[in-house]
Amino acid sequence: MKTQRIFPGVLLIGVGCYYLLQQFSIPFDQQLLSWPSILLVLGLALLLQAYIGREYSMTFPGVILFGLAIHFHFQSLANWWPNHGGVYTSIVGLAFILSARKQKKEGMLIGMLLIIFSLLSFASINPFSWLYEAYSFLSSLWPIFLIAVGLFLLLKRK
Image 1: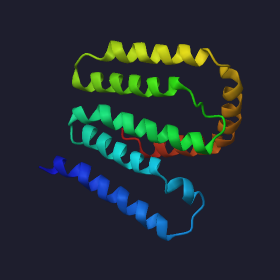
Image 2: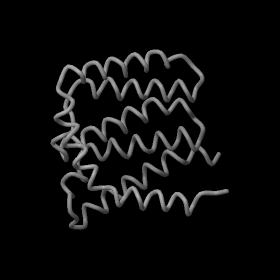
Image 3: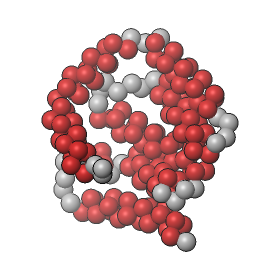
């Protein structure tokens, strides 16, 4: 019974946070209060329902919505983020792989083929131009990585 409350609970929390953020003046509010944020909340709610509620049929749409939301947010935030058809096939491929892995059904081969197709389509463009910009951005985040590893070591159960 409790597991049926996960999706609506996360959905209500996400929508409440969305409207609460509209009332405050925060940096990046135009980006956070856009339609990809609604996709992000829906995808996160579906993924939590899939993994916590063990309703693994929700994995596929959850990964699709969450992946598209991440893609659209990064596309407008970072100029190094690829705007290429390979992004969409890689999101669908990842959804097939994660769904097949949890449901013990077919789809792993389709997912792998879509990921390979995505990588080949990315190879048709010059991947090193955006890769260098991504590396320069990520290299500034190393303190956050150190904090995350430290928190992991502190909170890790024996």
